[in-house]
Image (tube, rainbow, N blue to C red; front, side, top):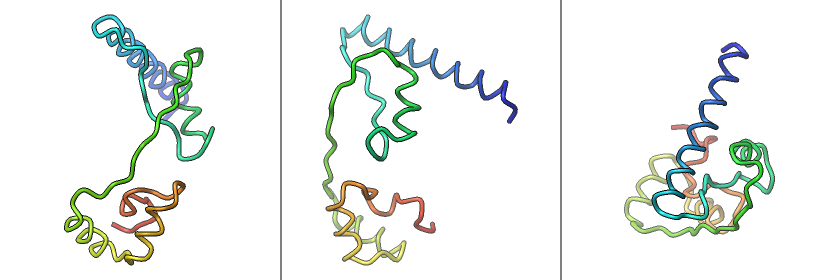
Amino acid sequence: MDILFKRNFLNFFKFYFFIIKYELNLTNNKKYFCLGGGRQNDDSLYQYKKSFFPYDEEAMYYTGRKIINSDIFNQLIKKYNISIKHSIESFKDPKEYFPIYNNPKIKK
């Protein structure tokens, strides 16, 4: 990809999210538009997302970790050869991927 294409692509996404934000505010009177955060506090993923709305107020939000269907979860960790112990440790560590089989280091 050349630099011009990348710049145009990024500008398109910024415009696209601006329109979505405008529409949500206009039609539903929403105050926040959440793109999610990064993997860690103030990392490059967060900075990239923040670049879409650099002047907007930030809002704190929290995500939960819950296994809804333990049978399917167990099948998936077996499929990817993940130990139950590693799975439980990753569940407790907020820096780990959840669910653990979403970790890009896991061979699929």
